[in-house]
Image (cartoon, rainbow, N blue to C red):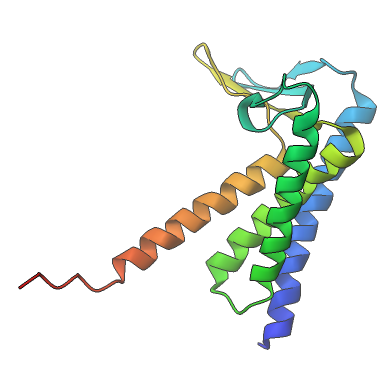
Length: 165
């Protein structure tokens, strides 16, 4: 398999994540009013909430400057990931970068166009409630977990350090 085909494959995956994320967010935004919640199971709801901050609503009440701050971070990270994906990579590494890229662009698009990120997946159990999130967040976390696994697998293959003499 030639490298340019593999590169297109990973950019395509990032595009699928982006488009799926935006399709879900647009559906929630158009079909359901802000604040809407629908119990799917005893531990999962579909909701329509806006998050002007980052993960766990970090800086959500910061007064508006955080929109541009998080947008700049997402765009900078996306450019860096595009650069990384242009190089030959191991499959799991390319998968990780592709997922993170698609998620970063999905949330960046929300910040640029909507001013806030639409969240709609809401999990809870036994009095414990996870903050609502979306497909982009899931892709970013999945990509990060894959990078950690890759790092752990690479660490196992490193030769043991020689003892000091």
